[in-house]
Image 1 (cartoon, rainbow, N blue to C red):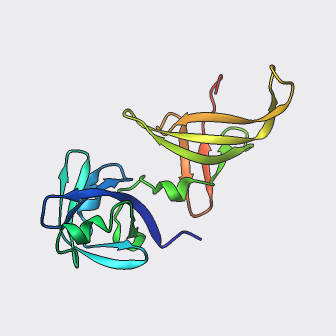
Image 2: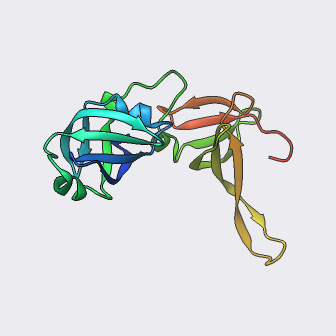
Length: 175
């Protein structure tokens, strides 16, 4: 079951004297959040009066936040969006939907593990996959879970099927 509300960022500070807030986005860019008419803070819908990108943050005027005193009360609050309000381009996914997907070898059909994290790097995202197979640690002799880092690019990602809960990857030597 996919969550209806998704974490989208955190209010890191106030901006100016009129009660605007600075939101550090947990999205590809702050511009993504600028398109929303409503955020959810502490489970309550809050209207977005205006929003603009400023450096690496979103500066937003929120309904009911009429000055710095109101805005400072929101500092460190998580901002959520309703997934139904978001429009993603084809082939784009929410990180929350990728976490926990089974990872399958495209050639053999073997289960390699699950996606445990997505690293957003400048060149492309990288999926962190915690393997189901155990590997032996040479230094301690104990078993440790295998971890793979797979670039989220067409050369490696063959298919992503969030509805059925899997990602098929092309495994290369050394991966």
